[in-house]
Image 1 (tube, rainbow, N blue to C red):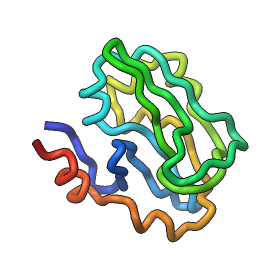
Image 2: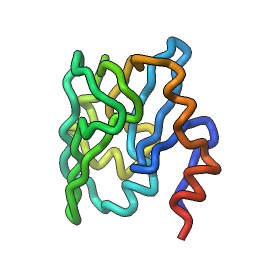
Image 3: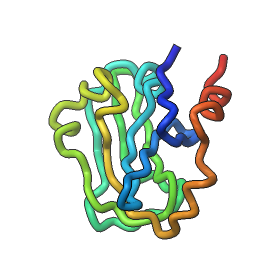
Image 4: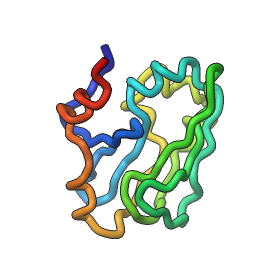
Amino acid sequence: MSTIPNDLKYTKSHEWIRLEADGTLTVGVTDHAQAALGDVVFLELPEAGRVVSAGEACAVIESVKAASDIYAPVAGEVIARNDSVTDAPESVNADAYAAWLFKLKPANAGDTSALLDAAGYATEIAD
C-alpha cells in the first residue's frame, strides 16, 4: 500500500503538489509512482524560467523498468528545480515526498482547486 500524505494535492498522472505559504507549488512524484517504476536511475527536470501549461510534459523520470513523463499540475512558471535529485535519483525511491522535483509559480492560484485530495488520489490508484 502506498503512502498518501493528507496535506498534499495530487494529479491522476501521479504527481504530488505541496501548496507553499508564498503561493508557490512544490511538485514531485508519488510513492505509488516510484513503486510502480522501480529503481529510478535518471531525472530530467525543467529549467527555471520555463513557462508550462497545465498537463504539459515538462520533466522525465527513468527507471530500470521504464521512462515516464512528469506533467505540470497547473499552468505557471518553473521557479526552481531540485538538482540534488538529478545527482541522486535514487532519493525518489527512498522518500518520494521529500524528493521534490521542481517548484512552480502558478499562473492562477485557483487552478489548484481542480487537483485531487488524498482521498481522491487513493480512489484513483485503488486496485
